[in-house]
Amino acid sequence: MKTDGSAGQPAPFDDLDRRLIHALQTDGRAPFSRIAEVLGVSDQTVARRYARHRGSGGLRVLGLAEPRALGEVEWLVRVQCAPDAAVSVAEALARRPDTSWVSLMSGGTEISAVCRSGSSEHSDTLLLQKLPRTPRVVGVTAHCLLHEFYGGPQSMISKSGALTDEEAARLSPPPPRSPFRPGTGDALPGPPAEPVVLSDADRRLFEALGRDGRAPLADLAAATGWSPTTVRRRLEALRADGVLYYDVDYDLRLFGYGVMVALWLSVAPAELAATGAALAAHPEVAFAGATTGPHNLFASVLCRDTGALYTYLTTRVAALPGVRTMESAPRIRHVKGPGPYVAVGPAVPRSRR
Image 1 (cartoon, rainbow, N blue to C red):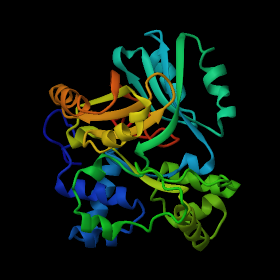
Image 2: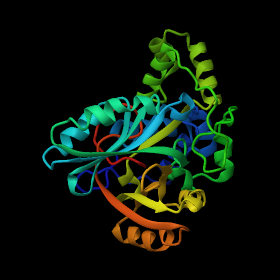
Image 3: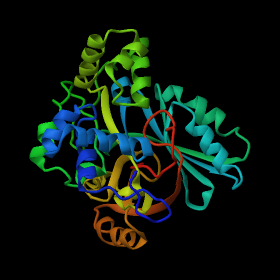
Image 4: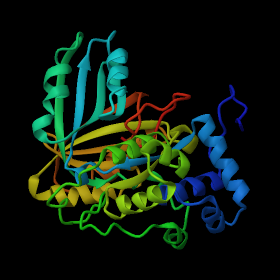
């Protein structure tokens, strides 16, 4: 593995690495041969780059289920802990398959996490029973994610320009045939009237994809009991229905991002849609969504350093319409990323929420 010569740290992603990650974000299961053709390099170069960065923990591709297509509800949870308990509580949260984006925030006494539940009626097990009764937890707040302006299959790399529009279009899969299209900021119809119901084999498929979105068909067939041909057809159908999408989880340090901040904005209701769409377009924003609660707009912001963050807050955020108040909280430690399972390997800062 390449290092930059300072304490054995991995070298930053170069231009080809960034183009490869953008290609994988566009289509996480695209054959290396097709990616290589778009990038103008050999198949072997693409395969070596991917294997090196995946092996070092620099990136991984995940196949994830879109919660709204399944009728699930996402909650943005903030847990206040005694200082000596925050790490153990965060790690316990991270081990749950219904959580993602678990982080220690400012001061090391607050944990942020995203929790999924089958419906709003079934969210009480974790949010109302288990967390409040956990020793050394002193407070829990949870806000329902109502609308996603940016996130899901979109990421910071999608805004980077690493690929040209024409190159990204050559790699882009067909859009979902369902009226439900995850991760857009447009005014779109809501999720299907009837949530998609997964079979037991589907759930085993998602479990395997949640660990490795590029797992070979033979491995997915062994996990599900299907034939490789059936697996391939099911992957295509789930994606076409807007249930399956692919995400790239990558090391923020290798992109040059040194600061991640959670922003909680209070926005006038009449301005919420316009403000959320404007916020989602900012190159610094990795995730943006409307939530319940006194702060009704949440965003994850990535900047190179604190100076860049100050400039962002006093220019782009200051110019947003309808913002009444703002709370910011820096992330000091990443515990878990976008998937349902904790990554095995080096602990590194991850992308987005």
